[in-house]
Figure 1 (cartoon, rainbow, N blue to C red):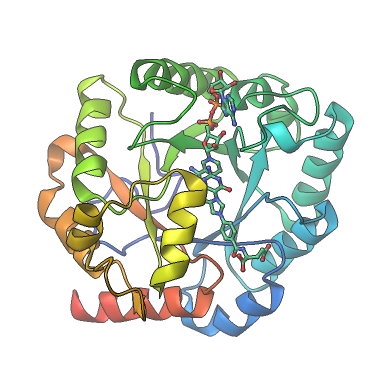
Figure 2: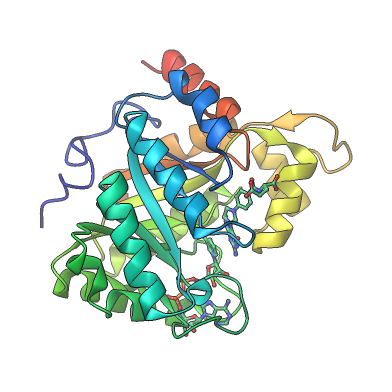
Length: 290
Ligand SMILES: NC(=O)C1=CN([C@@H]2O[C@H](COP(=O)(O)OP(=O)(O)OC[C@H]3O[C@@H](n4cnc5c(N)ncnc54)[C@H](O)[C@@H]3O)[C@@H](O)[C@H]2O)C=CC1
Ligand SMILES: Nc1nc(=O)c2c([nH]1)NC[C@@H]1CN(c3ccc(C(=O)N[C@@H](CCC(=O)O)C(=O)O)cc3)CN21
């Protein structure tokens, strides 16, 4: 399968670690995206989250802005937060007609009980609504550090089922990983994925630069490992939580450790509300490595 659809340069070796990066924004970060826009390369893929406390209208407005500013929207769908099939159908209709969305990312979502008819991502793929609305590329989650509700073996089975279903519905699959601070967790997980014969493109989720307390808060909330030893590798001492930290060490280490056996990868930055800081970090990294 050709993955050129995912990104024009997917089939080529990366120029550096930020080549073909993607970013994300919450649906409420309309002003944040406007402010950061001049720092972001044209046609960059920008994902719009599906978090509690956002309305569908805010998400649609955000996707429209991503498109208007000359970027490529990726719209998140949180299966457990979708209230009905009618709502999913309507939302897909809105984002595809108003923002020409071609890309979605589907994740189960954190609610322990689904708020509507869907308890997992596979069920969304199987509705047939994605291709009905012209969606071409579908991302699903990867979990380098595992997931509290599934064993690693179960997670691989789920991944293969989702990827097969995306193909069966005529769309192109992609995996986007949960953010992680631990380079070894990411590299080992990716090696296992490739050993299993899963050749799908992967976007590796890394945290953008942010305050240390904020990074640790997100790690806790999202079940991401942030032990003293992992954070030390990342460049953070847990005895001094003042200031902020960027992903330089992590990204440099990934650059060294990732080889041909890990297949095609690109980065996805999780800015955690600081889009400008992430865009600046990318530009500085690019300037240093080109
Ligand atoms: N990577 C990311 O950016 C994000 C990751 N997540 C986390 O990833 C989890 C898994 O998502 P997918 O890989 O899409 O799973 P999935 O939709 O492929 O489901 C796989 C299996 O895990 C179960 N499961 C998933 N979420 C659950 C939950 N919250 N409680 C109980 N059982 C659950 C499903 O019922 C199913 O049996 C989310 O539930 C969430 O906790 C959430 C948001 C963003
Ligand atoms: N298990 C899990 N659950 C999640 O909700 C989750 C993950 N994993 N992995 C990473 C993504 C990224 N997430 C987030 C969540 C909040 C903001 C954020 O900026 N929140 C604002 C206020 C809310 C808003 O603007 O909508 C904040 O200031 O905290 C960003 C990314 C949540 N995500």
